[in-house]
Amino acid sequence: MGKSKTKNQKKSRAQAIHVAEDAYRSVPHSFVFHRGQVGKNVGQLVQDMRRVMQPYTAESLKVRKKNLLKDFVSIAGPLGVTHFIIFGKTPNSINMRLARLPKGPMLYFKVLKYSLIKDVVSSLKKHRMHEQQFTHHPLLILSNFGVDGMHVKLMATMFQNMFPSINVQKVNLNSIKRCVLFSFDPESQEIQFRH
Image (cartoon, rainbow, N blue to C red):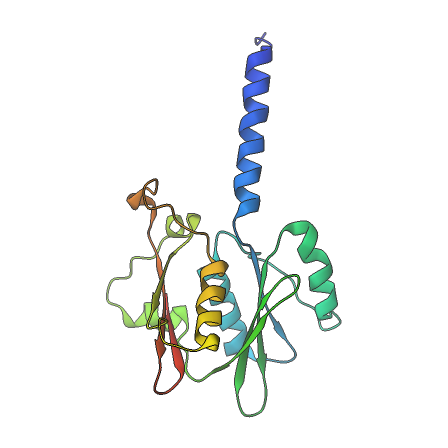
């Protein structure tokens, strides 16, 4: 017969669970989904973007035709979701919207070119992608976002708030396995995104 837990063990376990829940709630969470008919490749792009946003995103979010944006907003609050990444497709282009919940802003982007994870992996001779890389959030790198202009500062702030902040004094460098790079070109007004 096993020993019963003492008061101190129960109290310390409850306190540890409380601290873990607070830490989990303090980081940004996201939903990545599409609106409308997008096709197979953009659907795979949505799945790849969910991989980038792991571990703080809904990996197996089910999107149905009858779901409205209002449906996602209504469940985002109780689940602690702070950002939406929404893909859409028109006959001429692929669009991506980044939304901050609950009151905005929402940024609109046109996707000019993209490569899927499966394409990158198939082009490598030896790929080094394993599931343990996705247990910790990626390191965010912003390049050329110091340019003047409110829209550039807004984009930089939005990108920074999509990922958990890192305390330089306390971070374990061995836990960082991935990087996300946003590079802004002031001349063409284009952003390159790399993972």
